[in-house]
Image (cartoon, rainbow, N blue to C red; front, side, top):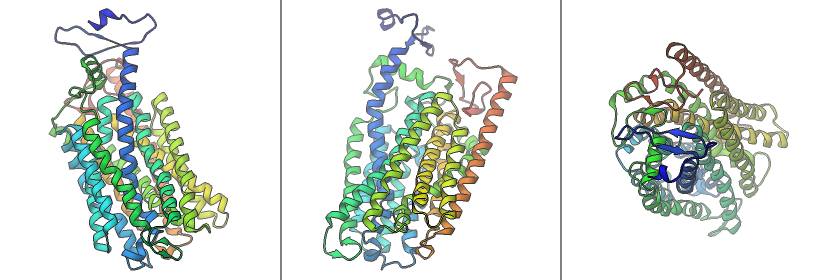
Length: 496
């Protein structure tokens, strides 16, 4: 056996795995586990991060297309901005409706099939946006985009939990969600490049007549191609993937069940669906997600327009969206790494939401200093993206079982995406250049999200302490049976 061929040295950390059929407990060495994690990272992170890059580009490129003549050609000029708001929010209606059923259903299919199908679907819808010609065709493409992306975003935290432990999830989720910020930066660069080249007859103040169509093609077609690659390259569940050898699958399964043992595989526990529907913490998480998603949708769709009110040209406004997104990606990764090390999410989420609220407060109270207002944009992007990445990782552990994760994660995401709909309607063109209503609403919701995060942190901390008093402290390496009670199992401990 492998364990007889290579004995761990005395200073190596050892972790007991679950018992095999003979009752023996094979040893998983620290080196073996590190090699496995590196192997998983090399395959899982590039594919899922690139998928999210293009998913986020495809859902948010309307903001860039708006400055390239989309409204003039397809929406009759849209002087009030109301038609653009509805086109932007159409995505979120279908996204919200489909999230919970899509994520629960995803448990019944190999992840590579499910995620590849979602990517091919949204890539097709995004590419077809280049062929739209009026308000109705734009709405149809955006609704289709929401349907397919609903099968991707909430499924990724569940997928990551198959392979990564609670001490690894935060940073991996930061890498993944950080590509939303990268998408913002990359989207600004692509839009700037397209506008500089100019496609089609020149339109004064806009650029080439076909610039927005080329933008949709450039950002839609890669998602289609990446979806095909995902079908062949993305590892399936630890117990069935051919990407791992037998020994690696054994270690991956031990890691997957480390700390908890519940519904695993292509099964759905109906009782855990009901438990999730009755869990007040999921709804509180949804309120946090509502607040930060209102801010996120606002920034994603309207940041180029907001920066333009600082007095810059359309092209320069596109370019100036890049640094805030780049800084947000760095802040997200650093904060998530720290959160993993100290095993605390609540205070980090609360702090990030507070930073976002301060950014909006600066935009409200400093109307004329361009440098302060641009700094405020950095606060908003850094605070908002960090809080979203952290709360997804927070709930990816704290729900106890696969079925409850598959229900609870899309539940709080669906509640939160209602904030995206609100965020799409609080920046009408008639409110420019100050946009006081939009900034005030976003500021208030970020502040409310800060309070909700602190409430959850106190609740989780209190519950852990209570269980320690009543049942004793659990062994960190012990297997907790969550098959019946999910996170309510007496020996289960939350990450506060």
